[in-house]
Length: 190
Image (tube, rainbow, N blue to C red; front, side):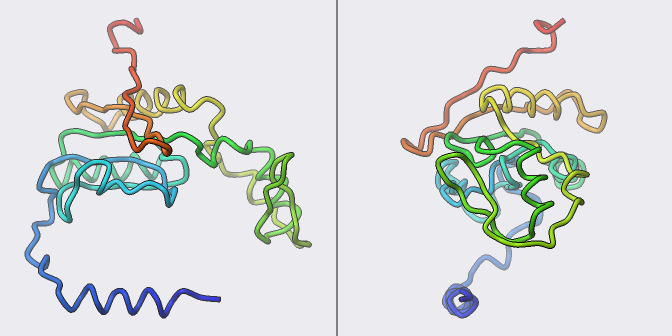
């Protein structure tokens, strides 16, 4: 069952009163957010954004993958952002499995897995694929440490100038609050 008709209908209503065609390409507030793709997170609401305010980069876990860093570098180098936020969240699906689990599931079948009391399990039948073993899935075992690791990875990337502040936060899915995650400074880590 597709939601295609619902999406197209919603777009028609949106386009009928669309008045944002004059927004500038660079984000008006000059910052970017790297966050999770989880449907419970609405960066526009939790960060007070309107269209055109900020770049929002989303992936599974809000992780500082090579592609996320590529997007952040484009964001500052070509579009002028000067401050970045890494925002993970509580109760993240990336905490519920390991690289080995997803690699094994994909090797068994390409069907959607199910989640039971003992974790994810396959409900499909093959064929699967061994291509999953070639991906770093960036799963999370400690949410706070994952934020720290991602902020540090971004700050230490050779294409990221040290003048760009990179802030780390956890979004609490039960309260809607952003909780700052302290990241050791370069001086204190030395």
